[in-house]
Length: 438
Ligand code: LLP
Image (cartoon, rainbow, N blue to C red; front, side, top):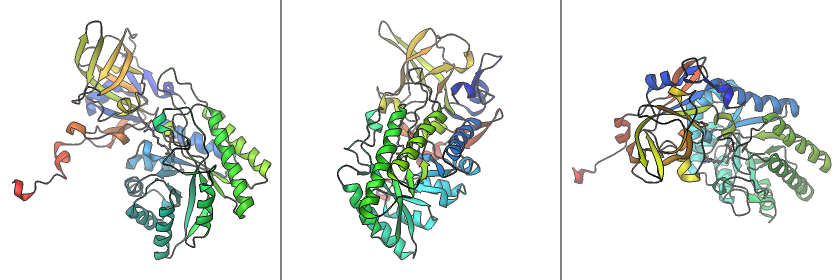
């Protein structure tokens, strides 16, 4: 799959996503608007599910990492595709449960799960909890004991791979708030600690080496290091992991600087590495889990904006301002992320100038892109930003009391809300004026 499978230019010269005319979508639903192509999301879920099933003899599970985009509809789609999900908070778990998602197919993460989140996860019957602290292990044991249950757990380990990606989203280097290092002995200590817990059943290990990764070798190396660790633990403690969760992180296309990954080739390489290492160390093949987020929803989504003010600073730069900004796409201000964009209402026109796209927040750093190549902008143009399906809606805020935009799902050319628009009333819903101020 690539962005061209979901995006087309139609006979009117308008951009289409999943068969829906973006100019019509903007007119019908307003802007800013997150738009998702359901067929693309399903195709990606199936690509993971089926490749793991074929290449690993059905002994694997794909878990959609719902932090990339969490709303009830996405869990409903994941459920109908018979895949699992990963959640990282009580809020994501609640959203999945509201969508009727089977709890046994949920894996819960978090480097600092709150007591109430742990209690809620146990009440829901979450399939797997990935333990990331000694204090968490104690809390989990107590809570599970109180409920007379045994909870399946994995340990988040840090195999010490440095994946080539933006520093802020690297999670497996030695200095990380995530996981236990395999090299300094803490991952082993944690294994022994959990093996001593009566109400926790250690099933295996989890690692996640970062996000937006393109080097196949990083994943292969992570698999190799994890299995070497599994073999060492088996030798030292007799415990042989039944589950290996290799996390997510597969890169997607944002601009032509990003290579197009052939997902199946990547997955097969990782799976081959797992098989080879198991043979090398004489291990049973563990149940393999993968947790892709961005690669499932990233390219499935675009954001539509309306161009407002246009400001040209002679010999410096041209700004075009849109009705969105850092409140609905904080990725540029956080990571200087790069994007490709197009005017949906004149999609066939060749680009002719590089502009900065500014948001409407009261903050100079509120840009959503620089050096965006576009035709000459006019107020009222409908601007489409590509590959905004992951970590956009899920990272949005009400900064400056702007609305978090609604999201629509396109199926067979027709769009429906999956997240409704906010109202001014929503913005003040939880506000309280103490009596003494009245
Ligand atoms: N599993 C774990 C434990 C993770 O921490 C993550 C992402 C994933 C899976 C999914 O990774 P993906 O396949 O989506 O790369 N806000 C950043 C991305 C942060 C990723 C955090 N963890 C961004 O906007 O680029």
